[in-house]
Length: 132
Image 1 (tube, rainbow, N blue to C red):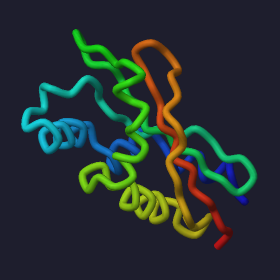
Image 2 (image 1 turned 90 degrees about the vertical axis):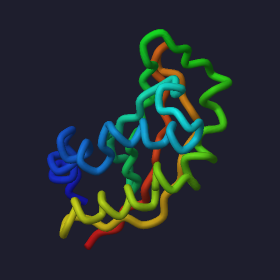
Image 3 (image 1 turned 180 degrees about the vertical axis):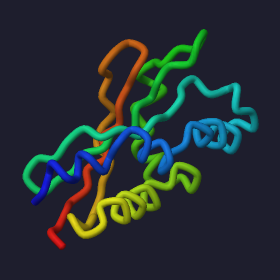
């Protein structure tokens, strides 16, 4: 598998197009009726490839004057996997398109929430890759 080519295609700019900043506000608007009620902003990031698994991260960045507590984020993988605004299946389809003739995305699953810093938690997105 051409991991070096994959990493060059999954740039921060390309991932921002797949998961734009505005989607965080749309998610909180749908969830709470007010985007300002959200405690974090969501960003899609590339983590790496091991064996045939591509791992992307949904980074949860604490918003100013908000609290990103573990009890807020532990149940999110189940919510994110089904929520139409987050649209994980759509994210995977767009990554598959971005990879083009290098690899294809197969099954995916969200991992458990990881606290990387007090003000940033991460939900890993594991995608099985197959050669094209």
